[in-house]
Length: 225
Ligand SMILES: [Zn+2]
Image (cartoon, rainbow, N blue to C red; front, side, top):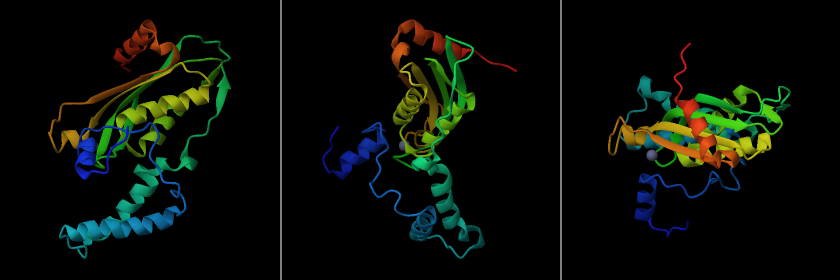
């Protein structure tokens, strides 16, 4: 998709939450600066925003906010932009010869909408059918968390999780469904607190209707402990 260099076009693109690529758009010089250097610059930027809004940064309650926000951006909520943070790809042989699908459901998703920089909160459900390789269960949680810690659109997050697992597991037979609330929809704009967004990506055998149905039925199971 190509768009003209027109601010209104970009504004409506963002409000409609349309994604332009399955890769996070990154600059070539993204990691020229160290984390500390980034925090130092962002701190001043946050201070500038707050001062422009008319806030008195000498107030004890506000004084530490620029530094706190800068550290949170770089180390936490956007920490997944850095490929060094990608979970290591340790895999195991499928010793049990388990040939059915494995589903990891209700994985907590905390991400940030890249169009408004507001939280996306929800659940991811992942399934795969082993091709001889398996991953530790928590690996799926870590992969979701890694890609979630970026400015995101939910469609891209869903695709990135599936692509990464396809690579790690060396199979196309991976699926992911994400159901999440976008605070940019819930708390501003249309202010619809009830609506949530569902996205899905079905690879390999999951394109088959029966296999897909099985996965979706497992997600619907109400697990009680
Ligand atoms: Zn948004």
